[in-house]
Amino acid sequence: MTSPPTSDHPRRAETPGAHDTVIGPSQIDRVVAGGFCIGCGACTLGRNAAFDVGMTREGHYVAARIRPDGPGDEAVCPMSDLGRDETAIGASLYPDLPFDPEIGRHRATLAGHVAEGRYRAEGAAGGLVTWLAQTLLERGMVDAVAHIHAVPGDGAGGPLFQFALSRDVDTLRAGAKSRYYPVTMAEVLPLIAGGTDRFLVIGVPCFIKAIRQLQDAGRISHEQVPFTIGLVCGHLKSRFFAEYLAWQGGTGADRLHAVNFRHKLEGRQASSYGFAHRRRDAPDDEVVRPMSTLAGRDWGEGQFKNPACECCDDVVGECADISVGDAWLSPYVGDWRGSNVVVTRNAEIDAIVAEGRRDGALEMDDVTPEQVALSQSSGLRHRREGLAHRLARLDTKGHWHPRKRVAPRLADERSRRLIYDMRYWIARNSSRVAADILGRGGTFEAYRRRMRPVMLALKIATSGKRIALQRMRRLTRR
Image (cartoon, rainbow, N blue to C red):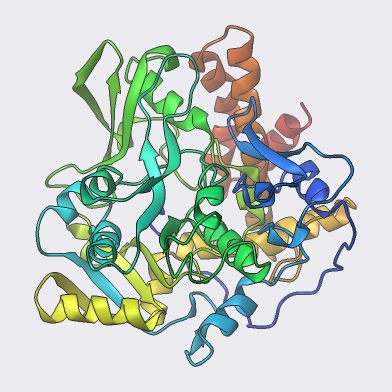
């Protein structure tokens, strides 16, 4: 899910921006080398796949070439120039629906929550994702759900979350909540493609786009994945984000057992949630800290952000049959229990949601596409104006980047240029700095000291003070 909005953003046209497409066998290699790989695992599907996916020392999943004699299927990569973009995919899937430049094609736009059961209490925001997934499973419309599951920490550096399959309600319900942690679909994709079962896939926009690219390539059929749920996304984090937050609660990575990134705090605004974690030596004792007390809480700073997210222009999940996010809107944000903002596109899913509204299972209000976009205004500005600025910077340096739907252009205001440059530096370097320090036996305290000047410079920049320019130039030369 995403952070609360802070500002307005420009709108983009339905026409893609101009950028020369790189054709040839090195497309995914360019994606990986440039830091644009999100680690989805699409390029690993197939007996003769040229790539595999693994977690780097910086805590991100990234593809690596394992067969030098073949390019693999380059077009399945969501960052590849060789596949269709989100606008084209949406137009082919939902041709009769109106198009909005921020949220893509849309059938219904809603805000609210699940009123029945404990979906809202146990899930992220308003609980709609789990409710809808369970409905599809119980009605036999899918045989299994591919989504993120928690993995108890082993103290040996293993991941805390992974993509897996749920074939029953209990397993599905255990996989609720937001997961700000790196994952890959590499292990579940062969299970989806290898049989006749029907799967619901729940994922962030780039993962859903990867599913669509695999369908375009004939690697996965629309019968095998008849439905998708897109999670409105701010950005993905490296594994160090969870470890950094837990460290501030007194727990090192070697003792970390489980985390809950969105612990709801009664009586506060929905955006004022807590971070909870459990230790391996006391798994029944939950340590809860309000996010407002923790360094790294500001989503806009971009600490431990996956650098690939800095080259993404899909916030809402425009390729998904339904997109679900946080309703960072008044009056919904005032309810600590959480609310969802919703965009439906698939007719069958829209009918299920409408039925839930009629029978009282869902309390949903009709909102406008503009209100949905407003609820995600910070992310949209960063991936419209901010993305255009970052692409222009890369062009100036002669660096290749994927073709996006916004044209490269430096931000008009000098202060915005500085802010976008600093955020990009943080996204590209924060996980590397943490990996270097921890790899030498250092601690997160040393990481925090190392990053403090640049974080202070960003804070100064957002307040409009000129001193940030000199500070940032000095820091980024290191």
